[in-house]
Image (cartoon, rainbow, N blue to C red; front, side):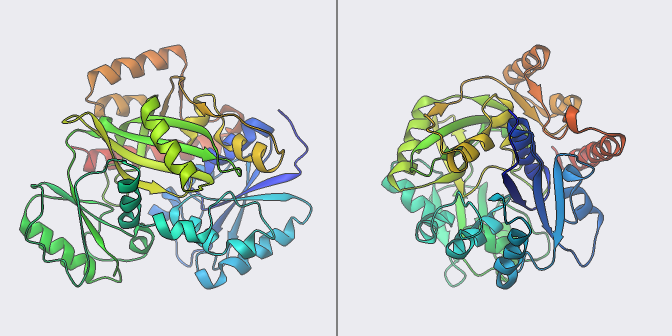
Amino acid sequence: MTVDQTFLPVIIQSGHNAYGVARSFYEAYRIKSLVLEPALKTKNIRSLLLGGARGIATQNSQIIDFQSVDRLDEPAYFVQALIHIAKQFKNKKLILLASNCYYAELIIINKQTLQQYFILPYIDEDLMRRIRTKEEFYKCCDLYNIKYPKTVVVTKEHHAISDVPFDYPMIIKPSNAVEYTSCSFPEKKKVFLVKNKEEQQQIIKNIYSSTYKDSLIFQEFIPGDDSYIRVLDVYVGKDKKVKLMCLGNKLLEDPSPQNIGNSLAIMTDFDEQLMDKIRYFLEDIGYNGFANFDMKLDVRDGQYKIFEMNLRSGASSYFVTASGHNLMQYVANDYVFNENQKLTYVQTKHLWSLIPKRMLFKGLKNEKLKIEAKRLIKKGEYSNSLYFREDMNIKRWTKLKLYNYYLNLKYKKYYK
């Protein structure tokens, strides 16, 4: 479909998520997206590869325009910086999208001002406060009979818990992921797998010696490798009705401490009962926009246990578009073209991966899923969102090969 570019997707933060979003818009409408990145004072190899200073995923691309924006990442200047961008495109409808939770929250907090300049497919701040932290989200789960792992919430003042209702190993993670992102301390990890009480005490000490002050989550470890993890991406229309749900079966996650939990390969899956339950929850609380859920199938009772909810599309949400249901087309059809869209539960099978096939099959231990993945590849139901034939040139191809080399090094270092 080709349209006069009367609207413009504006994506905050570069990286593979931003590229997947931009590719989705291009495939649907043959239009370019604008990607914004906060200007960095210093550059290092990790920022060049993974997101800062324009990550490799969005470099040398013909489907993206890019702007480096001073102080975009500073809350006090965030609105001012975006208004400056909006004034450059006065004659276009601007859809503002965030690639991570930090910017999603900044958009929501400043929604009243920003909605004068942008289309904002986001909830209001009052609802955000009810579900933004894991602690608050789990309270909502209790109300809607949504299962999650056995959990104990502790605070900086009261973390000496002696009676935890589950055994080691257990998980320790921040309740407030956005606040945790900005803190720093030795041996910081996104999530900690704790084997004994001594480790537990040291981790708590390290976290609370940093600027992080919010609650921590002690959580039962759900057995099983990456292939037991599921991701659910959802689009809820401006009429507060769910329009699209797509469930993914993770095959491999990033094993590095800073990025553990990020998907490297996903195969589409389907579970109508699960989708019905999440759909009822979202519609009943008055949600709108994108939502993303992480969970794990607990083989001990056959139930999905929810880990978290993100107030944005998932970092690997291009797997939805790759399955034949363009996720970004839903938001444009909703807000730009005012189309009436019916509910769809994705059932088509597709394999999405950020890593080379050789690396995928080396890491994937589930033989049943390995056979299914090979079948999908043979049928052509396979994609890597970064390798887009219509957006390939020698510079981009070279840098993507460099990115694969980096992933391979990381895989060898961390994957067990």
